Image 1 (cartoon, chains in turn yellow, orange):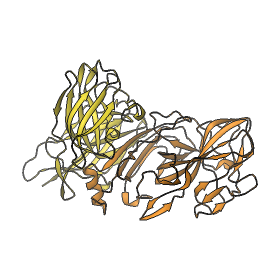
Image 2 (cartoon, chains in turn brown, yellow):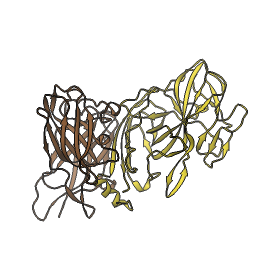
Image 3 (cartoon, helix red, strand yellow):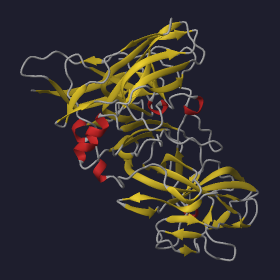
Image 4 (tube, one colour):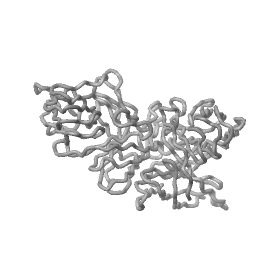
Amino acid sequence: MGDASSTADLGLASGGGGITMHRMSNPWTVPSVSSPVIGYCVTKMDLLTYNNNTGIMGGLEFLLGTLTVSGNSFSAGPGMPIRTVRGTSLQLGSMMAFAVVKTSLGGATTPTLTFTYTNQSGTTGQTGTIVLPTNPTVNSAFLLNYRLASGDTGIQAVTNMSISAGTSGVINIYGFMVMSMGGQSTASGGSGQVLETQSTPLPKILCVPNDTIAFYVMGNGGSQFMCHLTATPET
Amino acid sequence: MTISNYISIQQNLAQGYGIVMPQLMSAASTTAAAAGSGYFTSALRINALGTTQPTTIVGLLSKDNATNQMLSVFNSAANTSVGRITYMGRYYRIGGVTLGSTGNNFTHDSATFPVSRNVMGQTSALNLIPVIYVTTALTGTAAVFTLSTSGSSSGYVNQSGSSVTGNVSFTFPSATTLAASAYIPMLNYGDSGVQDITSVNVSMAATTGAFDIYGFEPYMLGSGLVGISSLSVHNAALGMTFTDTKPASAASGTATTFEGYLSLALDSTAAQAGIDIKVSNQ
């Protein structure tokens, strides 16, 4: 897959997310299954991008909320699900959360995005803000981890979003569960990071039909991005 | 839940009790080390957004207001034609030194060292790797200093908490050593770290020049960045430490501190990226 460049983050000191990120535009949807299979466990995910000195991540992504800039109209997403993790049913909380530009913004000069959320412990009504660059382009991803309230590390659900300026565009907030990650040292080939997901301390989460496995790249985008994914059926 | 085993790390992360820290790090042109300057050409790897070396340093993304954060995964990549060692850890500024004249030119940071934290159930003074970071480029002369007073009295506190008079001189590798260059000053035979630095005697001055001294607390070591490659250390149980990575406490005052990578390589200008994951012990 290949994308156009996204818009650079403003940095923490300016109210931004702290790092420029890009969501690749072609996530993968977990296919349907038949009984007795209930889903898949990803056992291996190899990632490679044609970007120099960057990082790449793949993982489960859950829509938490959508803001249509025109009219400041918010629509709640399904939120983080309950899943069995190493034998225990758990309410998931986001490992990472991103505000992703679904449709490029217009008329938005360094707008402040305000979001209300339920934190990792189930506390409702928490709020965070992030200052976005002017008119960010589609697939620009802004890290919210460092814009959460003091002490908060994850999000279970987003209950409201609003923006201080802008006339057009759409922003989604996603909760992201990292399955595989790696460093990419050079664009000239040969060194995409290969991680076997089973061997890391990253959580092993069952992927069920219609789940989204998405990919994020550090930096302004990826001219090329490749993934090889191996999954085993779970019964 | 309280972290008691490998599975509980995964379950805490799944519930959002963790922090994933993607990092794009700054790079600056530096002057290579030589035998008299500790052999290791070093580099502070810090946040690319907001950092203007050497005057403005912004540490890596780190959510220090979380309850506690223990490093579980460390990953790094660099595009470099030579091998490198990369640590992830925390820098504590111990003080600064001016090189424009001879004598005791060390000014200690306002915080009192050592810095301490709970390690494996016990409050422990941290033994730090000394790192000097050139804040003002040298001109005129390759300055020389030792970790001592001009009267050869104690200059640092070693890993055992003993005051030590440094007897190994450090000579900057060039009379025009660049700002943002970093080096590991050699300690006396048998010493492996510092808890504090108290004096720096400049025995040969430059026309201009200044440096800061940091103590570096390594969380994890990634040896293996050879050529155009990447590395990953992803076993929480086998890291160098599995302890809270929030800033350690100074004996008095608040230490000037930030997280970063310490890169030891001949080629210090290569850009570097990384991803780190910390997990909270709830």
